[in-house]
Amino acid sequence: MIRVIIVDDHPVIRRGLKQIIGAEPNMRVVGEAQNAREAIQLIRRTACDVVVLDIALPGASGLTVLDELKSDHSRPPILIMSMYEEEQYAVRVLKAGASGFLMKDSLPEELIKAIRKIASGGIYISPSLGEILAVGLTSPPMPPHEMLSNREFQILCLIASGKTLKDIGASLCISGKTVSTYRARILEKRGMKSKAEMITYALNQKLIE
Image 1: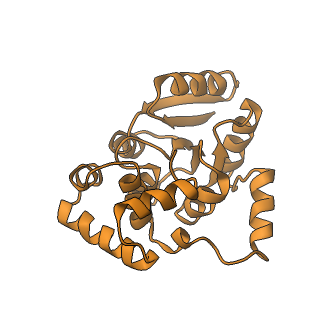
Image 2: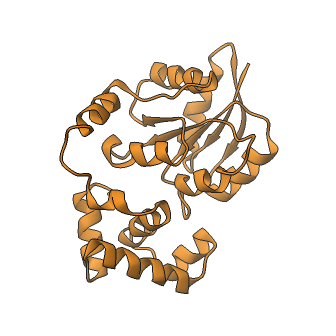
Image 3: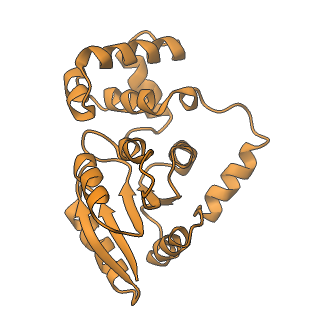
């Protein structure tokens, strides 16, 4: 039996995923969470074989969950699901410790295939992502945001989404002053001068909608 935890802030999506997974004779959903904090607590106290994790959670993102659980020796493999473009997030989450990446518009059959693959110890990437990674070996340099740390990348996306420094600090459990320091570092690294430039960049790179 493959035991699965689902993490997504939308009840309709969680219900849909639960129905797809529950229809398999050897799979069972053993827990659900709707944000990063709930997810971390649930994963640490619930025996499971795979976590299906949405990257875009309210407040702290799926990257926060990956970072928090990085040092847990018994951490189950994590399949990241996202509505964002593969080329913008997939490589980052795989480097952060995820065992797979799947777009939310994928077929149910692909979800089941991905869960089985990572439950058996493998890494799952879609054929389209495989092509992107292969092309990347001979393509021009990576986009500027790929040079940011995971925390800097999170804060860039949150600022560009309209969150205040205070709200970001609360969601990531850090002070507003620390967020301000990260903001200054992002601006310096990327040669930007204002929040407006950060928003424009994030929109152009399809990091936010």
